[in-house]
Length: 161
Image 1 (cartoon, rainbow, N blue to C red):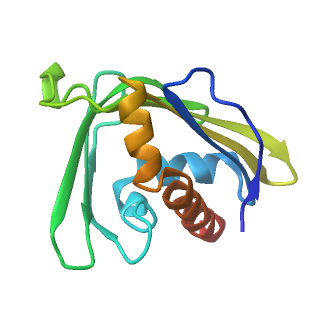
Image 2 (cartoon, rainbow, N blue to C red; image 1 turned 180 degrees about the vertical axis):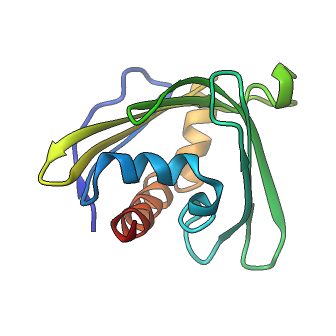
């Protein structure tokens, strides 16, 4: 189980998930950038991730499809705004493929991966929302519980690599 870190949001529109993950940084990064690995941890159970497509580079597109227990699918298209291999990923749903604006932008995610020693990773996800209302909605959807469960699932996958 990941170890929680207490890191305050940088604004009233941001949510933060910070953990020490018991797996090497490169493995944790791979879990975010290799579609075959993303599908193993990305959605909080009993949800699943039936498919993921990623062009992991600045300006590259991403599509992660989550499915509820009833089988209904929820596609999450986006764009990588910045990619620093092994260290940082910035992505947003404000755009879809080829910089096409999305119908309703919701968030920009800044992920950082740092060596914590002894094969562990300091993993921080900062999620900036377009408005306080969007941030509140994301909290009510279960951000802390859902992203926390996903961090535990990510750790399980990263440890096996």
